[in-house]
Image (cartoon, rainbow, N blue to C red):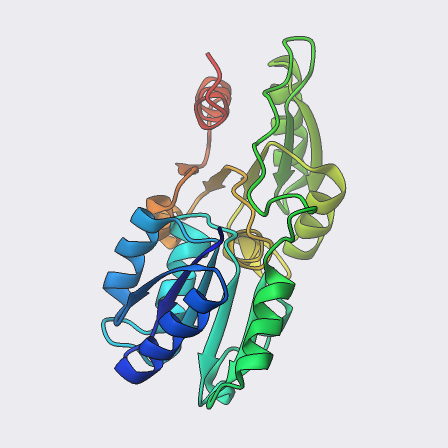
Length: 256
């Protein structure tokens, strides 16, 4: 039985969600504010979240950002709102996200739910992660920096430590290379062309819902210190010694 978490501050709409989805064979839990939604999400572990935009204690976007960044959750989200124009313009293009406009047509809502939830014959949205590489296999690391000297240095250090590497010199190249190379870890500079390291972080964690560990290597660590609260994120201040670099990579990858 699929589980749905419905987050809404209008009790009448919550009653509708409970009755409508229970009758359709779903297990349903509800929350009326952002804080309760996040706590209930951790406890209930729903397969899909229906999220109002203007809820108390932070709003629907705060809940969404928390799920996609701090909790690294790819759980599908349906925004249900009477003010769709207040949503970020690129939201429709994000991974496992849909928008329905209030007043919600039940048939439209159920159609979006069915699109986002796997059918019994499909693979689950949160598959069991693949086993770790065998000792003979190399972990892949993507190094992103606009300084060619840093790229060469880190590539040499990581190769000597047994890692396979690829490089990119700006934010756009980083995302493109990530999708081609499928690294186990990224090393990101912050101040670089086409959006910088923070933009790469947002693309991976929010748009692509990727939990890949990220190591920021930067001369301005304070600029991304707030991101270190997220899972699998570490910030190092340049210059980074070979021992510290390799040690940080191994720690993030949970290697001995």
